[in-house]
Image (cartoon, rainbow, N blue to C red; front, side, top):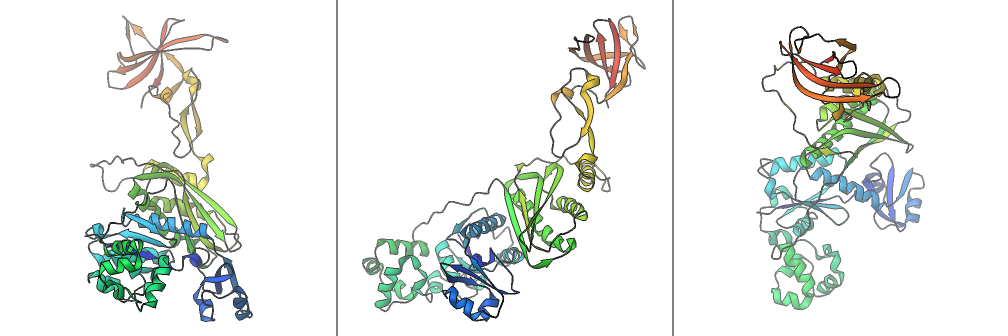
Length: 474
């Protein structure tokens, strides 16, 4: 059975801008109060009050008067969609402040309604939002029931019409003219109109109104396109107080990283770089970029790397907000896991390199790499190892990194090469001709296999007509 959970963030215009309760905060739209925090409400500020009246009432109180920012509201709603995608893949936004989640298909995954609602409640509370819930077989009814005072978790199995009966028709704000007409006829609640014959209701209210009512009751299908995850990720956390120490940031960092990695797993993506933004109380912005040598979705690894970066950071101003941004997402790769490895194994090399880079800087770690040179003695070099850098190219695919300081003579007896025993040529030749403007070089390179199974890199100097050994494969 289809079951929809409506999450109505009625304080979103306020909470997307400021979540402090230490002073009065009021959001204005066209110079009238749209939302006010609890501090302001306790001082007598209410919705639709004029800005002049607010200033008069709070003349002796510190107050923040903010203009409504619809783009900030939309951004917060999209971040909540990213979080909601971890609950169910079937969800969409409704209006400017609601999420509609189809959870009927997810109850078995969460082992029942109570655990699912607990997961939702914890996720929203950790982000500092206030929400009203509605549960119903249709998204329209779920939205209406988010205004009900009944306990939705215990009430959702009752017949839908019984639950809608006490709700006022004024909730149908898109049909004000029709609702006014019904009110003049003495019809004020959904129970009043649901008791009328459908034909009589259709003649009185019109096809559009009755069609909407049928969608609410589940008598007509109401199709909404499902939310599609974005190609990047961003989430934020507002503390509601001034953070003065790095250690106070860590719980919020853990929460945001868990949100990111949950999103990555749900979308089968990975990342090799994240960006932290610290928002100061003076609205300044400080950025911290954290990189990894490989793409992954392990929040604990990102947490340790972020902690290392913060060890060298001294907060210049108090922090009131924290944002996590990830613009570079890659398709997920399956990790190679050794089923026969011991439980207590040494730290993987990639993790060690990540910690060194983030503690000492990118320039502190070098690797052996290839550059575009024909002669092997010039092609292999050491360079700065950048995380997630796929610089390895096919030039070095059949070449060893361990080259001798200079090629050494290779004995040849009876057309057979010897180096610590006989050698057998198993791959080649690869011809290299270069340096004609100084001292011409013409070589045919081969991979040779020794009697003990070791592989060597050898070449035949076509000009000197002699054999040399140049490198050893690991």
